[in-house]
Image (cartoon, rainbow, N blue to C red):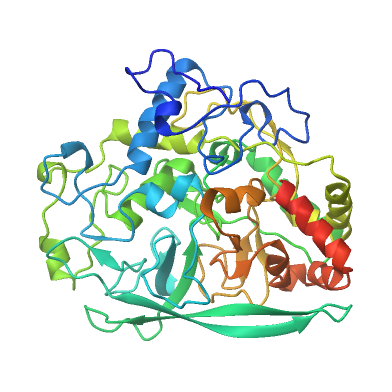
Length: 474
């Protein structure tokens, strides 16, 4: 493992200085192993999600390092001597992007066996009331807004605390093997600004791994819409739907690609929305604080950037967008293993690949806010159709989001899923982390995916293990 140094970077700034190492001597990957095409890196361990796309130029690697700094280091309360990083809050969930996406990876819910000892950071709760805003999106709760903030800066009250309890769901496989799933039930206590609306809708969202986002944005739109057309033409129960969402950077309605309900169209909007909602950091895209009218202490709190908007300037913001968009997906592991190959057959047999479409070729660009050619024309293997699917009542949150209804979720990409334990020390999956591992995630599937779940229920123990091993190889 050899440190990769950035030509033209500021003195001392290298991947090694960020705690990363590069496997420069690995052989050229095969097509099915290089999940991100030429962007793919050979990486395992805690830093597996933190490398830049392998085909970035030296100046682009410098941009990556700068974006990394602002992604991972904490923002501070204003006023502060650190002018480039002040403006945290007044309400917030995390102090940095990396606070939710630890090591650029996946958040986790509280330990099921220990209960909620600390307030969650990588798990947030969306709020809305019936109706649509002027852009067609959800209407915020009139007192607490569109996202619950359980932390606040000094002198401001947090909105309150989240409570979680778990309800066991028992079942058995066809061979008689029993299993128990844990259904989380969410609530609030210590609400500091009075009650929420009586008809408030609550949706939990777990921070996913951040790899490959620029590649997903580079998939041609017609490919994604084509997934929906093909599924409808097949005449079966699987009928994915594209979400149509408001994109703040382009000021128009676009195809949704990101977020658990495909409620965000671009990496730039996702980044600005996270700065705003998760950390209370304003930008030129979201220049107003998240404070609601009833939150007087929040409204009175000092602003960052010496009281001038925005708190994150456009240049810094663009570097964070570039960083987020060019985080490389790691290569597959054990792709030729006999058990993995058997699992791949079973994955197709259970019709999992209908929603988890394996491959695409990205467009030639240009891509908004990205000058890099690294993402262009790459054959990638993310295993997603980026469409909304009815996943049944068991996973329903009852909360619409643009065109998504309360039973629909976006098919999440599967690349990197087997490295989450290395990076983040857990195997919690699905939109709120209720599933402990691949098999539990499958068992939560319903609705359009009911037939696939039923097929897996009939698998032998050896077949179930093989299926999980295949998914973990991605």
